[in-house]
Length: 109
Image (cartoon, rainbow, N blue to C red; front, side, top):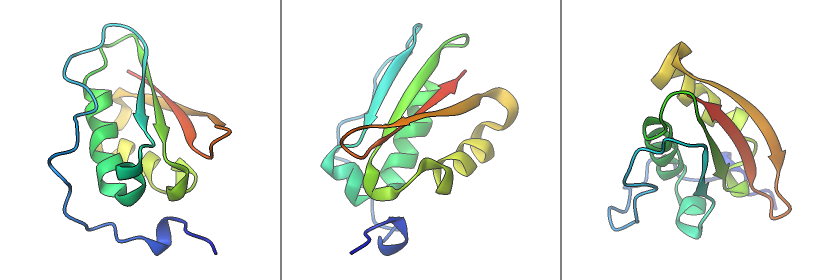
């Protein structure tokens, strides 16, 4: 059975007990792990924490957004959100699908 993003409830209340993706600005390139079980349960959480990761990456660096495979390819939901939120202030490229099914998108700030 296909459990892609179309089969999931995307309007769920985000669990505020979930650990923040980061608590500092990274003045280097880094990776944000958005493929934990609670990320699989909520695309909204993935999008919220992806935005936070980009906002916490200093200019001239990049962040690898590693998204849960249950939501499908990031081009189907993440890229549009990045464009709406950041416009031309960032750029991104798809890197690869991980062996575990997740996807890596590199966002340049």
